[in-house]
Image (cartoon, rainbow, N blue to C red):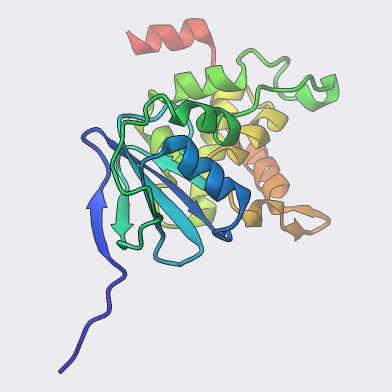
Length: 228
């Protein structure tokens, strides 16, 4: 007799249910206690045994869904329920308000720091803040898929360049801003900072995209006309 091995049952987040997923942590780490006590909703050990899932009623703040090993989704993602409950957190609760301070601390993109004019060589000035870029670009389905969920072609390097090209448009080629925004996206991973050819993978990829970029840059007047 063949007995299949399963990690648990999976379900799709949505319809008023969102989830927080933290991977690659010791269950005794302070972030684990902070998240489960702040939310106070159903919590369990993730299938890997090295993280947690917290499942909540309500909705998350609009914006980024992933930063580092902290993820929070309200749609478009499967969660595997293991049943390995972290007591006493056994009840599903509405966490629409409770998630806000955690989002601010772990997921919200940082506002841009003042940078030198040499860093703005391609843009002639930073006309949109990081939050404004995200707000406007989020109206594009392709940007949403890549930035919030990491969904793309399945070719990670190609998806990196696709998102970078979209960011080049919205930032008017401000490479420092492109780098900041990419780092807050779902595509961000350790490879971005990997040393390569005297630089890093991320820096080389951004400059490669900039050299090959032949599109236009965001112009509020022109863009409004196109959107009519």
